[in-house]
Length: 113
Image 1 (cartoon, rainbow, N blue to C red):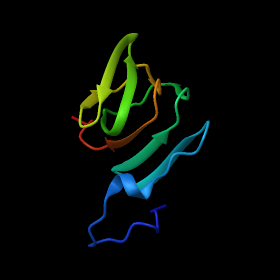
Image 2 (cartoon, rainbow, N blue to C red):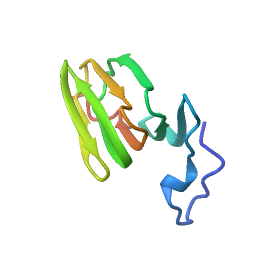
Image 3 (cartoon, one colour):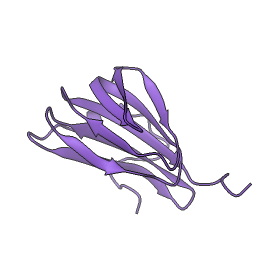
Image 4 (tube, helix red, strand yellow):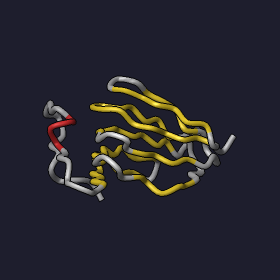
């Protein structure tokens, strides 16, 4: 399902389209297609996205604040503007030692070859 809040062909500032909620993780889908999706996430301090393993590479960029992204047990601390690619089939955990916003892109095609 596509998010109806984002109007196509109109410029917007992504960090203004999602707000922090105390003691919560807020995830908003920007684009969702069978070939992949783009989401923006706001995570309040002390919250954690549970460990997961995706069958696809995930590109994540910190839009605001600082995040700890643990990939296969290795901690990576990213600040505003920094990005990382979480490899497919790799355990990862995303932690908010301070609150942050990030955008994530998953491309599902290209794994056939």
